[in-house]
Length: 120
Figure 1: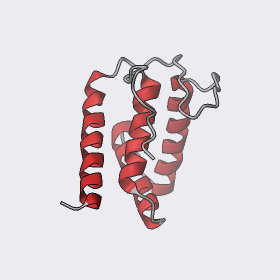
Figure 2: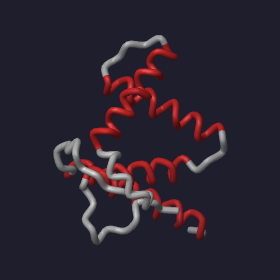
Figure 3: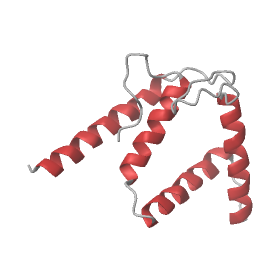
Figure 4: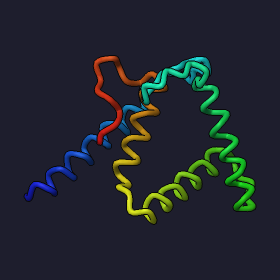
């Protein structure tokens, strides 16, 4: 196995581990604030993040002339965002890992001992 393949396999293993963390996330806490970017903007709570995401989802559904449930529309939006990332030549796996890592941290699923959710 060459070095590049080993790095890719390591990244896949890390991603699968992160996916398994989704089973243990605490209940949604709209007042929770956790920074992953060091900006310490306590005005941006998980409730605010969910509200911003719903606005983006509403715009996406309007652009697509769709009226789906939130979970279906969110899946479609994630898919469309992956098409964007892919079309721009970015690393899809890294984008997914970083996004999932940030979510787990902000949702309170990662302990303080866990490393930075960015895998860059």
